[in-house]
Length: 281
Image (cartoon, rainbow, N blue to C red; front, side):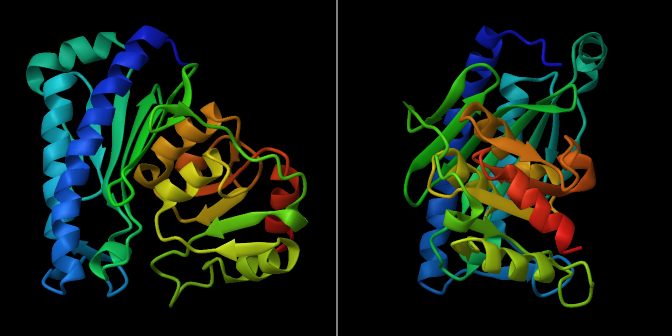
């Protein structure tokens, strides 16, 4: 249950929007290098999981900015893991409802590293473990998706809503695949084939945060993915819900972050999507 006031959430959202725009400027600088084939890529574990200096620079900037604005909040980043609350604020944080930022400083690194112009900055705030606020910024298109509990969802400041597509057979969907898809039998291949047969079409964008935001603004009707991490989806969940969408785990519950699986839609096709998932596992 989110108990932070809407006034407080709106103030946090304003700060987060500016931080995301500034982090996006860092990514635009790097993207120009990769477009010119001058960027350098490293790999975390396998050659399907890259990282660049701009992932790290963006995260360092975001963490410093959030620490300055909200010193009692916890922060979890894709690259640096959990950032501890400064000791001066530990006792204060213990008396407040837990606020934790889930940060993906560059969602879509594979796209970015290939000069493919589809990636984003994603910043999601969890309040007592539940997505309460989200900001996703696409620095190429300069599109800022934002939303907070009870405050609505916007694209570049204008209200947005999910689509009114009534049935899965008419729906445009998106998905993603886990990094261990080459070796694990739990790889999303079977659900992908099933959705290709049941939907109008399926796309693969490469940024989970943008997948969710595209559902929120009606460009897509639904999205699903497995083995997804909280920093990939926390922001998008908050935004999509405020845009009128529905988000569940594969069982239809509310445990997306812990189960690391998500089905998101305009609400009208949610049950059909759940049926397809149930039938393809």
